[in-house]
Structures are given as C-alpha cells and as structure tokens.
Image (cartoon, rainbow, N blue to C red; front, side, top):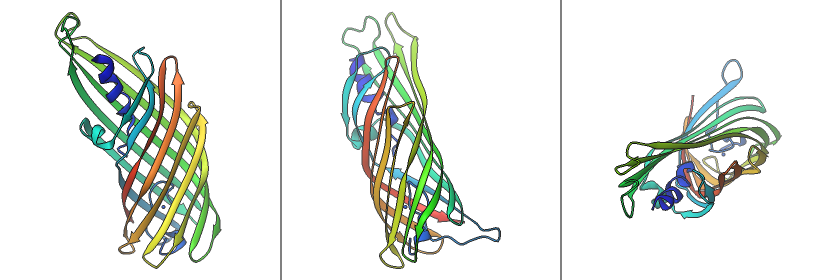
Length: 263
C-alpha cells in the first residue's frame, strides 16, 4: 500500500498543474501575450497567469524503492492537489526579450496499511517547483509574423515527505528530494490571422542535470483589447532525470489556458 501511494502521489508531484493582432503580440515562450505599447524608455512589459490541465506518464523512483511506471490523468492528480500557481513575466526592448516562467504545485494523500503493525496509515506530501529564466531575439519579423530564437535555464526542485501514524513508526517521517538545472534553447513563432485572432507555438529542448528536457506547444489567441488577451492550446513537456536512486522520467501534457495583461 505504501509503494502504491508513493507511485501515485510522489510521481505526480511534479505536475506543473500546469505565444499577435501583429507579430509583437506574443513574446513569452510559454503563454501568448497581447499587443504591446512601447514606454518612453523603449521597454514593454506583460504578466500572464495560466492554468495547465496536464496528465502525467512515465517512470519514477523515490525513497529507495524500485522504479515504477505511472499513468495519471489530470482528474486523478486534481483529487490530491493542495495548491498550484503558474505565471509568466516578460520585459522586451525592440527585438530583445527577457522572460521568466514560474510553476509550483503541492499535492498530498494518505492510505492505510494492510496490517497496521509498522503504521496504521501513511501520508505523502510532494512539492514541485520549476522556474525558467531566459532571453530571446527576433530573427524574423514583418507585419503579420515573428520568429524568435530563445535560450535559458530551467531549475527543477522536487521534494517529498513520507509520514507514518500509529504502530511502531508512529510520528516518524522521511524526506527525499532532488534539485537540478537544465539549459534550454529553441524557437517560438506567431502568425496573425486577423487583427484579433492569432496562432502561436514554441519548441524548446535541452539538458544539464537531466539527460533530456523539452517543451512544445501550439495555441490560438484572441485579443479583447490592447491590454487583455486570452489563449487556449495544448502543451507537452518532458524531463528525464535520474541520480542516486531518484528517478524522474516523465511526460506531462494537456490543454493550457492563459490570461495576459499588459502594463
């Protein structure tokens, strides 16, 4: 029962619960943005909270247990979700851009043990943080399209705590965690269909602490005004990390919704 709980919770603890009417509408590599207005000093800024209804599949291992395969839908994960937050911020100057993407989730769950000798029940909580800091440059731009080349660093941090209640192990707990950094590079593009509707997509790939780290998406956006727009699409993200018995080789994918505010 304990290994089953770890399989279904620790593995999905990395869920990141989980982008112009002109080409300048999208600057962030993750979430579309509205058309921007240049300030007196030439900079433009935007902020984009978003929601990613992703499922998760792959292989994981924690707490010295054997590697296990997981396949969890978003509804399975949502049942154990305590908190989740995702947002992107960006500053742009002409063809240059600096952006940050922050994702945090916390999930928890508990299950009883078959005999109740070592413990009557086991509780597992898992927190995951992923932060991407990068920069981009527009290598092509005209009145309806833009193509940026981008690069950056993504920091991953996964921490799980296993707590026991009742039995011989009553009140005891154990923690297993891993933190690593990956370098990523790729492209993002956007194409305006009408003054209000646009298509966007991105693709990033890299490695570092992980053997492979990648992120791709395709979306359609609608600009309500010069300050607010919305986007809907599909995103897939994969990472293959292993070190000293800690294995995190998963793919997360599902629909993404974003709201972008310019200021």
